[in-house]
Length: 174
Image 1 (cartoon, rainbow, N blue to C red):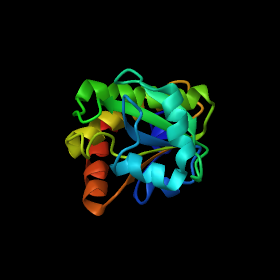
Image 2: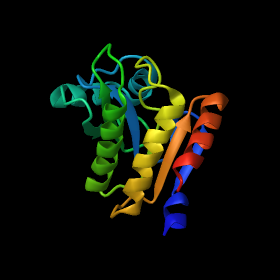
Image 3: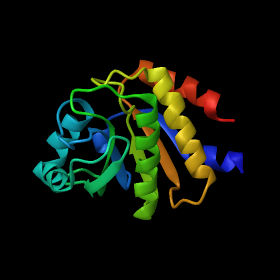
């Protein structure tokens, strides 16, 4: 069974906003304001509809995840993983909960594919290696249970992040 869940995970370098998946995950603040980093890229490519939907939903609890349309993105949905307060830092419990809740939102919508960035590692200051371990463990646990997800991608911005995620994922694989 373990081989089965591992075969559903892809770790690659690329542009999250171009991902051909049912949903991309936004590294969000709990006010659901799309500022810089991943959120800014989603806002720029996805168009104003995403922020408008966020305004109707937010704020949400830190550690929660909300879902909106994908606007003009290839992905049909954006799942906003609130791992921090606006201007705040991401903590490990908040990252763990936001990742878990993002996976749950995808399953609730019966989605088959989702793409994550390295949530909380930009302006929110969470260490990249620990992020990979925490998110990897949550994805592993989710895929071992009942889920509609058939593909979970981690899309990293650059080669160093890609290598860190590949290495760290090996630690959580068992």
